[in-house]
Amino acid sequence: MLELFHAAPSYYSMVARLALAEAGVSTISRLMDIHLAKQQLSPAYRQLNPKMTVPTLRGSGLLLTDSAQILAYAAEHASVPWADADPSRREAIQQAVAGHYALSIETLTFSKLLSSRPWFKRVMVPMLSGINAKLEREAQHAPDQAAVLEAKIQVNRARLTVFRDRPAPQVLAEQREQVSAYLASLPPVVASGWLFGGAISSADVVLAVLTSRLAMAGELSLLNRNDLQGWWQRYQQRPAFGQADVWTRFQRRRFLQAALDARHTSFNP
Image (cartoon, rainbow, N blue to C red):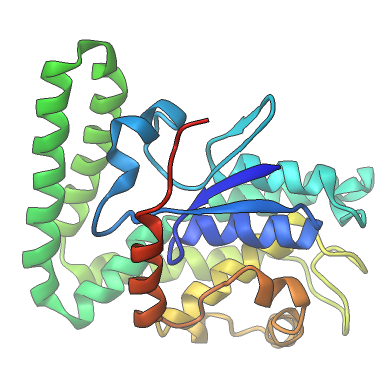
């Protein structure tokens, strides 16, 4: 049985959960707490996923360490073929998926949060700085892990540059433009259809999670095309959408319960 290591509120974990649910691929859920306990930074999880991110999918002879890989796996193993299986549509679908992954969902989410709650910068900046200090200490004591730790440190430094040194409203405006341009690039959707015809595709999966995050961030107005609005209403009715625990709003109780449940997760084989 496949194991999915994921975090309940994590955007890319939602991509993986939705992709696997749509494909009919069963997994054992391994919840992680990436916000309070920061289990993704632990040496045990680092052995599993050196990028120290979620999600990770593990099975016999299988180890996928990001949502794009898991999405591709789901498309290939879907019990009912997705539009990805159609050679005439494959390239356009891949371009739509690549466009989604070119967006910085974290930057959009946190720039919106900092625009409405500037005080949160006093929490975020020390938190990221503290994580980097911890990783730097670990790198000194574990030279064999220095490369992967330094890579994570550089990612966090880039985040600090954005969230500490730039005005949040300016960053948010840039993110809105990028998301709007991406949505405008998507093909027209016919009534009762999906992005690339009568079957869903990888592009539908990532767009569903992106739209959910826009709803959570209060940015759903960016989805201003009538055809995409109709698509969104239909997609929310798909059984997989409910099964995958895709968040359209922040769920405080679910967040705390998942953090408690994550204490029982083991990363050992």
